Image (cartoon, rainbow, N blue to C red; front, side, top):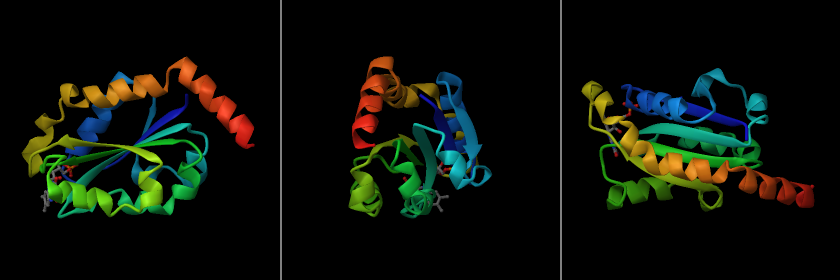
Length: 154
Ligand SMILES: Cc1cc2nc3c(=O)[nH]c(=O)nc-3n(C[C@H](O)[C@H](O)[C@H](O)COP(=O)(O)O)c2cc1C
């Protein structure tokens, strides 16, 4: 399964998470503004890694803008932030993403601290559930099922 990791990071933690993920799976990795829309088409799985700031998810706009292309494959959104995933503030941020997109993606929120010195939070252990999920969807069996579905649709 062709996989791309795309990240947007202001203070470095999200970039560090994206790099750690890149070490763990077979994928190409890009800063969000270093890959054009047409190139997205060659990926079956796109993993977006986004920092969050005052309720704004840094790749939320990107996800909306490129959804027509992204929805043809699988999409994982990993949001990096200091507020825990189950906190109502985090839930509200996530719910700002349109329903139609939320239904089509797998979402994770991973921990960070606030500021430049938080990159050490980007430890591989935090990525374990994400890696487990990716290994599941990229297994040959699931990829075969996906192909069958695409054939049916097409
Ligand atoms: C101004 C500011 C606002 C923030 N707002 C949030 C927030 O709303 N929710 C959250 O979970 N984390 C928040 N954080 C924590 C950041 O998401 C955290 O620092 C993260 O590492 C940022 O990603 P980056 O290092 O890749 O830029 C905020 C941090 C800053 C500096």
